[in-house]
Image 1: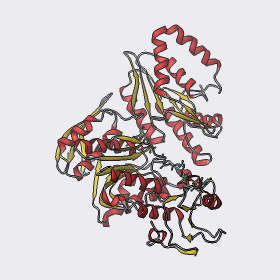
Image 2: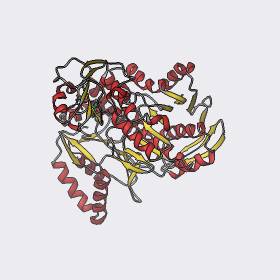
Image 3: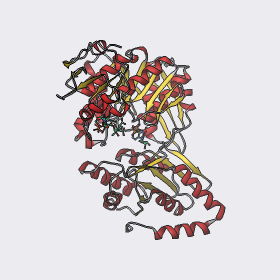
Image 4: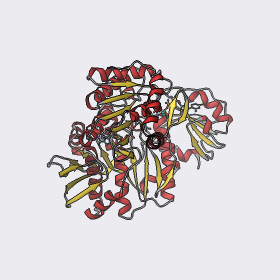
Amino acid sequence: MLLSSIVASLEHTLMQGDPQIEITGIAFDSREVKKGSLFVAITGFETDGHQYIDQAIERGAVAVIVEKKVEVRAGIPILMVQDAREALAKLSAVFYGNPTADMNLIGVTGTNGKTSITYLIQAILEQAGRSVGLIGTMGSQIKGDAVETRNTTPESLHLQQLFATMRESGVEDCVMEVSSHALHLKRTAYSRFNTGIFTNLTPDHLELHQSMENYFEAKAQLFEQTTEMNIINADDPYGLLLIKRLNDRNAPVLSYGIHPSCDIYATHIQCLENRSVFTAHTPAGEIAIQIHFPGMIYVYNALAAIAYGVSQGISLSTIQLGLHNLTGIRGRMETVYEDAANKVVVDFAHTEDGLEQVLTTIRSFASGRVILVFGVYGADGIHGERKRRAMGKVAGTYADISVVTSDNPKRQNPVRLIHEITRGVKQAGGSYHSFVDRKEAIHFALSQCLPGDIVLITGKGHETTQLLGSTLAPFNEKEIVNAFMTAKNLAGSAIIHSIHAAELDTLEIVRGK
Ligand SMILES: CC(=O)N[C@H]1[C@@H](OP(=O)(O)OP(=O)(O)OC[C@H]2O[C@@H](n3ccc(=O)[nH]c3=O)[C@H](O)[C@@H]2O)O[C@H](CO)[C@@H](O)[C@@H]1O[C@H](C)C(=O)N[C@@H](C)C(=O)N[C@H](CCC(=O)O)C(=O)O
Ligand SMILES: Nc1ncnc2c1ncn2[C@@H]1O[C@H](COP(=O)(O)OP(=O)(O)OP(=O)(O)O)[C@@H](O)[C@H]1O
């Protein structure tokens, strides 16, 4: 494709060179440049893409988009733009033939529940016989086949490329998670969203957004891009704010929640140990719903999916069956071990609200104690510290025993992170133990488990690796739990006492009360 055609609708200044050249691909990372590429230099948080222009040219880049003045050898066309990330999104959409114009795109945003809602919607659409694409934290899918992708919401270039592949594969509907990072960094600019869904907003990612107001504004951007329908949780204060703001928009609002004033609401709710049942009231009528997920949060997530199904004219019986067919989502309230005496649940709760919701759900059906194993992933600095303290307080309030450990400590000092969390546990009057090594923490929790107790392991959910320093180490909680419980069952309590004693020797941090 000619560079002049790709940039025809892009506001830019040609600094040098002739744009009548053939472009065979686009790259925003010099390491991914191929012969004939257009390189887009982005000013990043860690480094500056403008520093890698020479490298990109050496690797075969034939033209460069910049957002600041640079010295580049003569002959290479250089185009200056105001915002390189936005330019990348526009050029990528043009280069791949604007694929979202040819599909039904559903964007799900909010702090918690995005992944779950995308899976619930996928289940309804598949039940309705549609060809579905899915993009999110656990990777992407094209008509059920897994596709590896980076980030919850991939960078615009990769996103448009993926949309194009979906279009070629005959995908009719694509349901995707839209993170606040993506909205802030323009990854989804120039994607045409038919429907936007807003779940809730509670503190998270404040190291990037700095305030809840900015965080909300980032999320709200999705609804500037929707063309047909906005589905919003009206029981959430920020959802209500969004509904007020969207009053004068073309795309109508369909609200959901527990309150009967919502367009889609639930009554006769029963949250049981492994499922939830309720009656959904919709403009198309009412229907009994049964989902394989426990807790109010999944009633909300299911209501969002029902609202979407109803907005598409899908019959209530198809919606009912689709939701019922989804028997689980990896790492979301997933029972990874269960016998007559004990149960071990793995969940991806990694915010203060998510942890509180999951703990209160588990508490409601635990006949014994709730033993929580968790760490907190969060940036350095005041926002990360607040998050760790707040999640510590939630654990101290709702768990009988908190076993505080590492999440993905990356290059942070794990001992300091754990101290920040345990300070919160202590403030809430909770009882805790702490281990830097997450596997030891899990073993310790399992060794403490008495009949009727439930061990809840949160933070990593579906992940099968742990990021320690810059090393990505294998870490599969389901396997760790099952290996330990198998040993426990085979050897009886004797072996467990010896494992327990060995672990007590390796305690790295002074125990709490
Ligand atoms: C904080 C954040 O979002 N960072 C994103 C940002 O990185 P950055 O600005 O730090 O990039 P940088 O490393 O400074 O590099 C600047 C530019 O130089 C380029 N470069 C760099 C080195 C080199 O040798 N050559 C080169 O060309 C880079 O490709 C980049 O274009 O721009 C990069 C390029 O698009 C993204 O890959 C990167 O996402 C990183 C991987 C990330 O982890 N982001 C997370 C926080 C994120 O986005 N999370 C949300 C979901 C969160 C949730 O819901 O919980 C998500 O959607 O995944
Ligand atoms: N509606 C909800 N409200 C509050 N917490 C929720 C809700 N749904 C799920 N959670 C909690 O959040 C965790 C993550 O859920 P899910 O993956 O669906 O959310 P997400 O928004 O996609 O998060 P991420 O983008 O980080 O993957 C769950 O494991 C659960 O603990």
